[in-house]
Image (cartoon, rainbow, N blue to C red; front, side, top):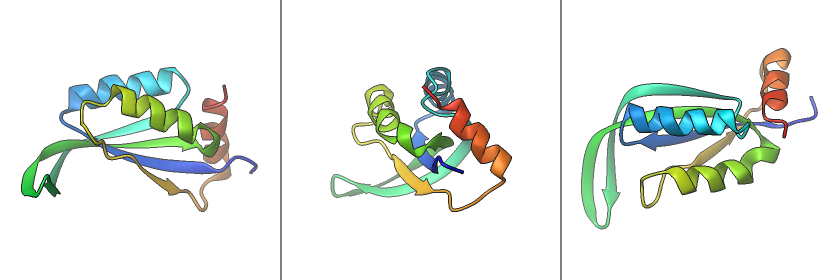
Amino acid sequence: MAAKILLALSTFPDAETARRIANKLVTEKIAACANILPTAESIYRWKDKIESGNETLVFFKLSEDRQSAFQEKLRSLHPYEVPEIVFVPVASGLTDYLRWVAESCAS
């Protein structure tokens, strides 16, 4: 398998925003797939204050060569001042699935 695959995580204020942005990233072949988990409770420090709230978590699958484009596009579309954008390398997986991810992100 030539292409390295990444799992990217990001949280959104609601499912509608997550769906709209995920759809755009997949349509533009920046991500192959987005899995939207509708409710995640988040507790975090923001500007020296402890905050909490419900967010929508999205798992994106993409090829490593789309990482910069993904980050740039997500950052431009995301409503948060500092969005969560975390990349996790996929060490292994079903070869056919990983190939599909790479092919789906090919520009």
